[in-house]
Length: 139
Image (cartoon, rainbow, N blue to C red; front, top):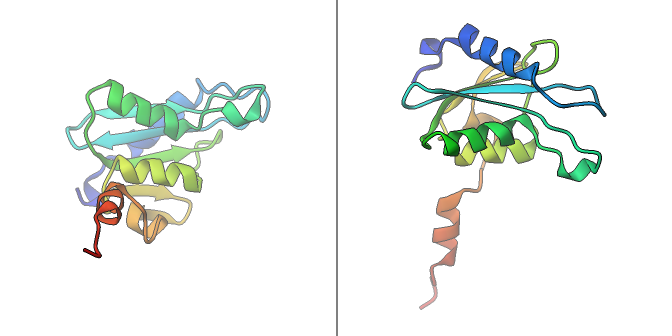
């Protein structure tokens, strides 16, 4: 889907709404994310912190869980926002999660404008690499 056909205001509103449900008592940095799926569904997620910092969940993790819990599919567009409702660039780990649940042309709202996943995660490693690299190419 071309970026200009995405209802960015609606997607951003869904991300802002779920951001208010984030559990961030330690950092007080709430994050919400909303994704438009290839079947038209909107899936959302928010960050969930934990006193044992390493086991906290990013908003994107919650959204990816929601994707699979609600029937799967492929991301078409993503809006990730901070506690002020401003676009927030996902970390590298979360970019990988988005890559595996979208496609190279999936569009994402970033602080620098609309970009594709291929632009924000160049030379991405994905499921196909596991297959290609597992094959014996020497004999």
